[in-house]
Amino acid sequence: MRIVVAEDLALLRDGLIRIFQANGCEVVEAVDTGPALIRALTTHRPDVAIVDVRLPPTFTNEGLRAAIDARRQIPGLPIVVLSQYVEQLYARELISDRAGAVGYLLKDRVMDVERFVTDVRQVAAGSTVMDPDVVSALLTHRSTDPMLLKLSPREHEVLALMAQGRSNAAIAARMFVTDKTVSKHSNSIFTKLGLKPSGDDNRRIMAVLAYLEG
Image (cartoon, rainbow, N blue to C red):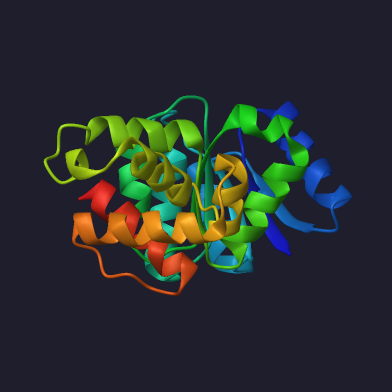
C-alpha cells in the first residue's frame, strides 16, 4: 500500500511514517503544507492519503481543501482525514461527493495502531470509515429529523455502527446479537429512511452517510 502523509507536526508525521512502515506499507512522500499535498497526490497517485485537516499556510482547513481539490483531479482518490476535534462541517464536506473511499478519524484513534491501520486499509480498498465520535455528532445533528425519530433505540445503534464502516458480523459481535438480527434491523432502517437496501456493504454505508449529510 503506497501512502502520502500530510501532517505539519514533525513528531506525529514521523510517528505515522514509522507505523505504516512497520506494517508493510510504503510512505512515498510526507508533506507539511496544503500546496505540497496537492502536488504529492497528483504526482504519486497513492493508494491512500493521510491528511491533517489544518495545515499551513492558513491552519484552518487547508489540508481538507487540498484533499478535496485532489479528488476532483483524481476521482475516488482514497483520503483519510485526521482531526483533533469533531468538526461536523469538515466531515460533511468530505463525504459530500458521495464517491466513497473516505475516512474521518480523530487523532487519538492513532493510539490503537492495529485498528488505525485496518481503517486505513479499508479506505484504500474503497470503503468509508468514520470515527464513532464523528458519527455520534452527525446523528445528534439530525436527531430531530422526523425520519430519524422513526428508528427504535436498537436501530439507532445499528445505524451508528453501520456508518462507522462495520460489517453485519462486526455489528452483531459488538451488540451481542446474531447476524440475522442485525440484518433485520438493517432492513428496517432502510425502509424507515427510504433507502434502498443493497448487498454491497460500501454502498449501504454510503447511503446512510448520504442521508446524514443531506
